[in-house]
Length: 279
Image (cartoon, rainbow, N blue to C red; front, side):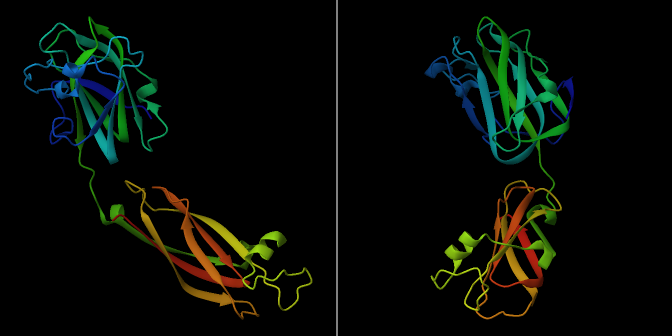
Protein backbone atom coordinates (compact mmCIF):
# COMPACT_ATOMS: atom_id res chain seq x y z
CA UNK A 1 0.00 0.00 0.00
CA UNK A 2 1.27 3.47 -0.88
CA UNK A 3 0.78 6.38 1.49
CA UNK A 4 0.57 10.07 0.71
CA UNK A 5 3.35 11.64 2.78
CA UNK A 6 3.32 15.42 3.16
CA UNK A 7 5.53 17.86 5.05
CA UNK A 8 3.49 20.09 7.34
CA UNK A 9 4.00 22.62 10.11
CA UNK A 10 2.80 20.15 12.70
CA UNK A 11 0.91 16.91 13.37
CA UNK A 12 -2.80 16.47 12.55
CA UNK A 13 -5.37 17.85 15.02
CA UNK A 14 -6.22 15.60 17.98
CA UNK A 15 -3.18 13.39 17.38
CA UNK A 16 -1.34 11.99 20.39
CA UNK A 17 2.47 12.13 20.84
CA UNK A 18 3.53 8.68 22.04
CA UNK A 19 7.26 9.19 22.69
CA UNK A 20 7.02 12.16 25.03
CA UNK A 21 4.01 10.60 26.78
CA UNK A 22 5.75 7.27 27.32
CA UNK A 23 3.12 5.38 25.34
CA UNK A 24 5.53 3.46 23.10
CA UNK A 25 8.40 1.01 23.68
CA UNK A 26 11.70 2.11 22.15
CA UNK A 27 14.67 -0.06 21.23
CA UNK A 28 17.82 1.10 19.48
CA UNK A 29 20.61 -0.64 17.60
CA UNK A 30 23.22 1.42 19.49
CA UNK A 31 23.92 4.58 21.47
CA UNK A 32 27.08 6.70 21.52
CA UNK A 33 27.35 6.31 25.30
CA UNK A 34 25.23 6.66 28.44
CA UNK A 35 25.22 10.46 28.13
CA UNK A 36 23.77 10.28 24.60
CA UNK A 37 20.89 7.88 25.32
CA UNK A 38 17.20 7.92 24.40
CA UNK A 39 16.60 10.24 27.37
CA UNK A 40 17.38 12.97 24.86
CA UNK A 41 15.10 11.57 22.12
CA UNK A 42 11.74 13.38 22.78
CA UNK A 43 11.20 16.21 20.29
CA UNK A 44 10.68 19.08 22.74
CA UNK A 45 12.40 17.73 25.84
CA UNK A 46 14.53 20.34 27.69
CA UNK A 47 18.23 19.57 27.88
CA UNK A 48 19.23 17.42 30.84
CA UNK A 49 22.40 18.52 32.63
CA UNK A 50 25.29 16.22 31.78
CA UNK A 51 23.50 14.73 28.77
CA UNK A 52 23.40 15.58 25.08
CA UNK A 53 20.38 17.49 23.82
CA UNK A 54 19.36 14.58 21.55
CA UNK A 55 19.77 10.88 21.12
CA UNK A 56 23.02 9.90 19.37
CA UNK A 57 23.78 6.61 17.63
CA UNK A 58 27.20 5.03 17.79
CA UNK A 59 28.97 6.39 14.74
CA UNK A 60 30.26 2.96 13.70
CA UNK A 61 26.81 1.32 13.93
CA UNK A 62 26.04 0.00 10.40
CA UNK A 63 22.28 -0.01 11.01
CA UNK A 64 21.55 3.13 13.06
CA UNK A 65 18.01 1.97 13.74
CA UNK A 66 15.25 2.81 16.23
CA UNK A 67 12.14 0.65 16.67
CA UNK A 68 8.98 2.07 18.21
CA UNK A 69 6.75 -0.80 19.30
CA UNK A 70 3.24 -0.96 20.72
CA UNK A 71 1.40 -3.86 22.36
CA UNK A 72 -1.62 -3.33 20.09
CA UNK A 73 -2.24 -2.13 16.54
CA UNK A 74 -2.10 1.67 16.29
CA UNK A 75 -2.95 4.35 13.73
CA UNK A 76 0.36 6.15 13.17
CA UNK A 77 -0.40 9.51 11.54
CA UNK A 78 2.85 11.51 11.65
CA UNK A 79 6.56 11.49 12.41
CA UNK A 80 8.48 14.64 13.39
CA UNK A 81 12.26 14.99 13.55
CA UNK A 82 14.83 17.64 14.47
CA UNK A 83 18.58 17.72 15.11
CA UNK A 84 20.73 17.91 18.21
CA UNK A 85 19.98 21.03 20.19
CA UNK A 86 23.50 21.63 21.52
CA UNK A 87 25.57 20.76 18.43
CA UNK A 88 25.43 20.98 14.62
CA UNK A 89 24.37 17.35 14.18
CA UNK A 90 21.28 16.01 12.46
CA UNK A 91 19.84 13.26 10.24
CA UNK A 92 19.51 14.25 6.58
CA UNK A 93 17.68 11.23 5.13
CA UNK A 94 16.00 8.17 6.62
CA UNK A 95 13.71 5.23 5.87
CA UNK A 96 10.59 4.16 7.77
CA UNK A 97 9.26 0.60 7.88
CA UNK A 98 6.31 -0.96 9.67
CA UNK A 99 5.01 -4.32 10.84
CA UNK A 100 1.53 -5.49 11.71
CA UNK A 101 2.57 -8.81 13.26
CA UNK A 102 6.03 -8.16 14.73
CA UNK A 103 7.67 -10.50 12.21
CA UNK A 104 7.25 -9.22 8.66
CA UNK A 105 8.52 -5.69 7.97
CA UNK A 106 7.35 -3.59 5.02
CA UNK A 107 9.07 -0.53 3.56
CA UNK A 108 6.82 2.50 3.52
CA UNK A 109 6.20 3.40 -0.13
CA UNK A 110 8.79 0.92 -1.34
CA UNK A 111 11.61 2.28 0.81
CA UNK A 112 11.28 5.94 -0.16
CA UNK A 113 14.06 8.16 1.23
CA UNK A 114 12.40 10.68 3.54
CA UNK A 115 13.88 14.11 4.12
CA UNK A 116 15.29 14.84 7.53
CA UNK A 117 16.84 18.07 8.74
CA UNK A 118 19.06 20.80 7.33
CA UNK A 119 19.87 22.41 10.69
CA UNK A 120 19.79 21.44 14.35
CA UNK A 121 16.50 22.95 15.54
CA UNK A 122 13.96 23.14 12.70
CA UNK A 123 11.19 20.55 13.12
CA UNK A 124 10.32 18.55 10.00
CA UNK A 125 6.95 16.74 10.24
CA UNK A 126 5.84 13.99 7.84
CA UNK A 127 2.10 13.25 7.86
CA UNK A 128 0.77 9.89 6.57
CA UNK A 129 -2.50 9.58 4.67
CA UNK A 130 -4.12 7.22 5.35
CA UNK A 131 -2.68 6.47 8.79
CA UNK A 132 -0.19 3.62 8.92
CA UNK A 133 -1.98 0.85 10.80
CA UNK A 134 0.83 -1.07 12.48
CA UNK A 135 2.16 -2.75 15.59
CA UNK A 136 5.58 -1.09 15.30
CA UNK A 137 7.48 1.49 13.26
CA UNK A 138 11.18 1.23 12.37
CA UNK A 139 13.39 4.30 11.74
CA UNK A 140 16.74 3.86 9.97
CA UNK A 141 19.32 6.56 9.22
CA UNK A 142 20.59 6.88 5.66
CA UNK A 143 22.68 10.07 5.74
CA UNK A 144 23.57 12.59 8.45
CA UNK A 145 25.51 15.77 9.16
CA UNK A 146 28.63 15.30 11.35
CA UNK A 147 27.05 12.60 13.57
CA UNK A 148 23.75 10.60 13.50
CA UNK A 149 21.81 12.50 16.17
CA UNK A 150 18.11 13.31 16.45
CA UNK A 151 15.12 14.29 18.50
CA UNK A 152 11.78 12.99 17.27
CA UNK A 153 8.12 12.26 17.93
CA UNK A 154 5.59 9.74 16.65
CA UNK A 155 1.90 10.62 16.60
CA UNK A 156 -1.16 8.39 16.65
CA UNK A 157 -4.89 8.91 16.51
CA UNK A 158 -7.21 6.71 18.58
CA UNK A 159 -8.70 3.73 16.79
CA UNK A 160 -12.46 4.06 16.97
CA UNK A 161 -13.74 1.13 19.00
CA UNK A 162 -17.06 -0.49 18.17
CA UNK A 163 -18.58 -3.57 19.73
CA UNK A 164 -17.23 -5.60 16.77
CA UNK A 165 -13.69 -4.61 17.78
CA UNK A 166 -14.22 -6.26 21.18
CA UNK A 167 -16.55 -9.22 20.65
CA UNK A 168 -17.83 -11.12 17.60
CA UNK A 169 -20.24 -14.05 17.47
CA UNK A 170 -21.25 -16.26 14.57
CA UNK A 171 -22.10 -19.87 13.70
CA UNK A 172 -21.46 -22.54 11.11
CA UNK A 173 -22.96 -25.87 10.08
CA UNK A 174 -20.96 -28.92 9.02
CA UNK A 175 -22.34 -32.17 7.58
CA UNK A 176 -21.00 -35.65 6.97
CA UNK A 177 -19.21 -34.77 3.73
CA UNK A 178 -16.93 -32.41 5.67
CA UNK A 179 -15.49 -35.22 7.79
CA UNK A 180 -12.83 -37.77 6.90
CA UNK A 181 -11.82 -40.92 8.76
CA UNK A 182 -8.45 -40.79 10.46
CA UNK A 183 -5.78 -43.22 9.17
CA UNK A 184 -5.85 -46.67 10.78
CA UNK A 185 -2.71 -46.07 12.84
CA UNK A 186 -4.26 -42.95 14.37
CA UNK A 187 -7.47 -44.80 15.07
CA UNK A 188 -5.45 -47.40 16.98
CA UNK A 189 -3.75 -44.71 19.05
CA UNK A 190 -7.00 -42.91 19.77
CA UNK A 191 -9.01 -45.97 20.76
CA UNK A 192 -10.16 -45.19 24.29
CA UNK A 193 -10.24 -48.86 25.29
CA UNK A 194 -6.52 -49.21 24.67
CA UNK A 195 -7.19 -52.40 22.68
CA UNK A 196 -5.91 -52.75 19.13
CA UNK A 197 -8.70 -52.69 16.60
CA UNK A 198 -8.89 -54.54 13.33
CA UNK A 199 -10.05 -53.42 9.91
CA UNK A 200 -13.07 -55.72 9.80
CA UNK A 201 -15.58 -53.14 11.12
CA UNK A 202 -16.25 -55.22 14.23
CA UNK A 203 -18.65 -53.79 16.82
CA UNK A 204 -15.74 -53.12 19.20
CA UNK A 205 -13.81 -51.06 16.70
CA UNK A 206 -13.67 -47.30 17.24
CA UNK A 207 -13.20 -45.22 14.12
CA UNK A 208 -12.51 -41.52 14.52
CA UNK A 209 -13.45 -38.80 12.09
CA UNK A 210 -12.07 -35.28 11.94
CA UNK A 211 -12.56 -31.93 10.29
CA UNK A 212 -10.68 -28.64 10.26
CA UNK A 213 -12.51 -25.57 8.98
CA UNK A 214 -11.07 -22.06 8.65
CA UNK A 215 -13.28 -19.29 10.03
CA UNK A 216 -12.72 -15.64 9.10
CA UNK A 217 -13.78 -12.92 11.52
CA UNK A 218 -16.17 -10.31 10.18
CA UNK A 219 -13.66 -7.64 11.23
CA UNK A 220 -10.00 -7.93 12.14
CA UNK A 221 -9.20 -7.63 15.85
CA UNK A 222 -6.47 -5.31 17.12
CA UNK A 223 -4.81 -8.31 18.81
CA UNK A 224 -5.32 -12.08 18.95
CA UNK A 225 -8.69 -12.72 20.64
CA UNK A 226 -9.92 -15.48 22.90
CA UNK A 227 -12.24 -17.91 21.10
CA UNK A 228 -14.90 -20.09 22.72
CA UNK A 229 -16.82 -22.78 20.84
CA UNK A 230 -20.14 -24.44 21.59
CA UNK A 231 -22.29 -27.10 19.92
CA UNK A 232 -25.87 -25.87 19.51
CA UNK A 233 -27.27 -28.97 17.79
CA UNK A 234 -26.12 -32.29 16.35
CA UNK A 235 -27.68 -35.01 14.20
CA UNK A 236 -26.03 -38.43 14.30
CA UNK A 237 -26.06 -41.44 12.07
CA UNK A 238 -26.84 -44.78 13.79
CA UNK A 239 -24.48 -46.42 16.30
CA UNK A 240 -23.84 -43.59 18.76
CA UNK A 241 -22.97 -45.63 21.86
CA UNK A 242 -19.94 -44.37 23.84
CA UNK A 243 -19.56 -41.49 21.41
CA UNK A 244 -16.84 -38.90 21.93
CA UNK A 245 -16.61 -35.44 20.37
CA UNK A 246 -13.67 -33.06 20.73
CA UNK A 247 -14.00 -29.51 19.46
CA UNK A 248 -11.44 -26.74 19.86
CA UNK A 249 -10.18 -23.51 18.24
CA UNK A 250 -6.61 -23.64 16.91
CA UNK A 251 -4.27 -21.41 14.87
CA UNK A 252 -5.96 -18.24 16.10
CA UNK A 253 -4.88 -14.93 14.53
CA UNK A 254 -6.35 -11.43 14.52
CA UNK A 255 -8.16 -12.28 11.25
CA UNK A 256 -9.25 -15.91 11.53
CA UNK A 257 -8.92 -19.30 13.24
CA UNK A 258 -9.46 -23.03 12.66
CA UNK A 259 -12.29 -25.06 14.19
CA UNK A 260 -10.94 -28.57 14.81
CA UNK A 261 -13.42 -31.41 15.44
CA UNK A 262 -12.67 -35.06 16.21
CA UNK A 263 -15.54 -37.46 16.71
CA UNK A 264 -16.02 -41.20 17.22
CA UNK A 265 -19.37 -41.15 15.42
CA UNK A 266 -20.52 -40.34 11.93
CA UNK A 267 -22.36 -37.04 11.99
CA UNK A 268 -25.20 -36.04 9.68
CA UNK A 269 -24.78 -32.42 10.67
CA UNK A 270 -23.47 -30.32 13.53
CA UNK A 271 -24.17 -26.67 14.35
CA UNK A 272 -21.38 -24.75 16.08
CA UNK A 273 -21.38 -21.26 17.54
CA UNK A 274 -18.25 -19.28 18.31
CA UNK A 275 -17.59 -16.18 20.38
CA UNK A 276 -14.34 -14.27 19.94
CA UNK A 277 -13.51 -11.50 22.37
CA UNK A 278 -10.75 -9.30 23.74
CA UNK A 279 -10.33 -9.34 27.49
